Image 1 (cartoon, helix red, strand yellow):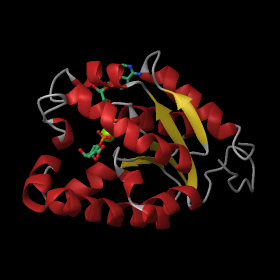
Image 2: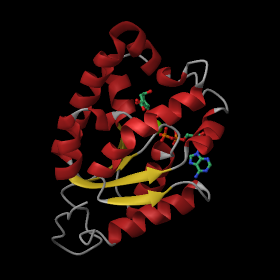
Image 3: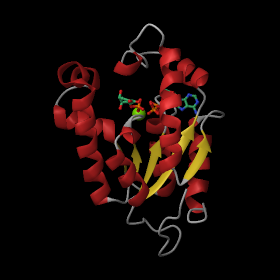
Length: 189
Ligand SMILES: Nc1ncnc2c1ncn2[C@@H]1O[C@H](COP(=O)(O)OP(=O)(O)O)[C@@H](O)[C@H]1O
Ligand SMILES: O=C(O)C1=C[C@@H](OP(=O)(O)O)[C@@H](O)[C@H](O)C1
Ligand SMILES: [Mg+2]
């Protein structure tokens, strides 16, 4: 973990972004909106940008272009957001797979890893379209897949994170408060 530029009063909207990373179901999309409301910043989700640009849903992009096509689009979305700055940014869980994305997350903002165990992710995503809307979890053993993804990605989340926050317990608003607290303490990690 490293430092992040801290010029200006603590509550100013900074030049960089506040990024949320973590596995599918860790609450990135839900928590980003609440953090943004608390800080008075705009927010966005790289998955929304990708879907808007493609004119297709994520399952449709995976079906038509494969995971590699999705990753290319996700990188383009992140690169654009990184140039603009000043937002709370929910990312997709696989954003850390590309080294160029990891470099952007390290250097263009403050990145928080929302840590949640796979069993809790599986519980959350088993409701509604949580599994069906995520192609990597549309498999016979989604919990096994989540465990495998965690083993592969956890070192990458830790590599990019300026702070690690538990997203396991409490409602989304409580998790958002932990993220805001980590952001206010930024610079010392
Ligand atoms: N702190 C939480 N406690 C319980 N459920 C949560 C929490 N945060 C998010 N969820 C639920 O988990 C599911 C996945 O959340 P989402 O924000 O889409 O995660 P991500 O963007 O990281 O995949 C949603 O149904 C959401 O309502
Ligand atoms: O972990 C992943 O590789 C993915 C996570 C998803 O976003 P969430 O993490 O918001 O579910 C979405 O980008 C896509 O289905 C791939
Ligand atoms: Mg999301």
